Amino acid sequence: MKSVFLLHWAPRVLAMLAILFISMFSLDAFHPGIPLKEQILDWLMHMLPSFVLIIVLVIAWKWENIGGIIFLSVGLAFSPYVFWGNYTHNHSIWLSFFIILTITFPFMLTGFLFMLSYYTKKKAKEMMKTLEKNK
Image 1 (cartoon, rainbow, N blue to C red):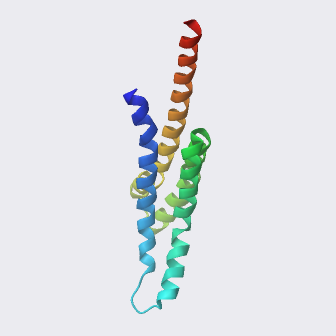
Image 2: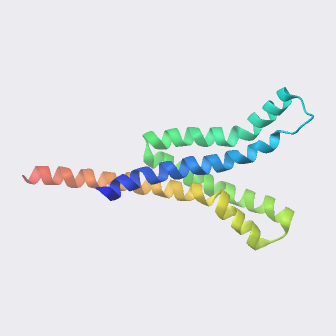
């Protein structure tokens, strides 16, 4: 029972932490000497990926299997983009790979954990039905 509880909350907490981490990058929109209205608009543009990921988290909270697939797909889809963008700046395969691990891997892991949670709960429900049926 404790493992089901942990498996239920682990992807949710990981998703929130990963979204907060991604959101930190939006703070570079604030610079002195630029009008506040423009800075806020820049910040909102930088926050668009975080807003989309929050929507995915809401979906995953309700439908774990669908949200898990979306999180896994997001992580896999953006990995080449993040890798190539960083490789063109630093020309290091290993550094770019490390950046992939810190930025997109948490979302892939979150997706896997949401799907694992879904199938674990589904199997537990089936076992409970079987036990009740055999009484």
